[in-house]
Length: 381
Image (cartoon, rainbow, N blue to C red):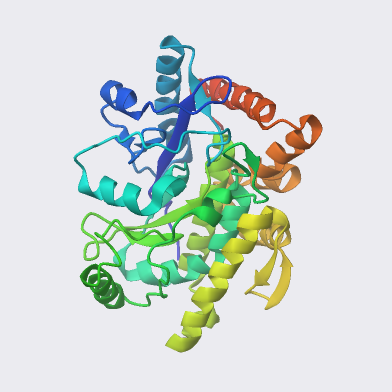
């Protein structure tokens, strides 16, 4: 079987603020300037969404161009900038800066979850046909903790070292608390309607889990998988590597049809598996790439980075067939240098200052984005 590249799109959530590291409530001003940007309930985080594309060069463009525009606007309006990480690192006001005072969904979120939702992240959407969507949803969910290990960038929060690589994911309110494996579309429709009826979900968007089906008319009309577990990653080349890692896992299933046998278990066993995967997510939220987790492929416990190393080597052949190996390869850089949380903590251990650490990485984030302009003019070949 031959597979074409899949359509891919990202929802990129960001913080903006001062070069000193203070996150400011700027989303309303940004929305007025950039009509295609989205607002979160609190004005301290905002979002832009890339168009779905198959080409990785085009995806690079889609990620970088809006960010370069917003950077220029911020610089021209008070020497402001973008701030890396997925939780607010310095002490911040616990008052809410409502972005839409008349939005009932926003009001519900703020009243229910407070400041736990003021985070940034990468939501990665991969286009999947209806025939394969639920098989791939279940299969990819087994590896979803690895994507948090690669992307974790939220070790600081509210002026404190949290003890977590992804405090965002540890603290974020997963809703509903228990989300089963959906083996068929019918199961997903029935379950969603039950959650809405019981008010465990306020609407179809109110499914906050690590991975979910998505489409123009949920739960009925679906055309993609949305991976929601990833923290914000500053380096766009590494973002593309994580996307390529996901795509290669999916494409390998599509090419070979060898879906995990563990998913053929009875529903009770699958429910136990839900709990196990949740535990793996929490272990990785705590310790990142060094977390010792269950490797379902070999039924052993091993460090996450070793699982990713083995999986990367196994996926290189798939990446070569798809001609995207050059995009996958920066995974080795993440394994060598650590995720962003690791790098933040290494710098903090030298200077003992969260503010100095964030200021340093604000500069690095700016440098990486400015270099990206040259990469747009001279695409990877």
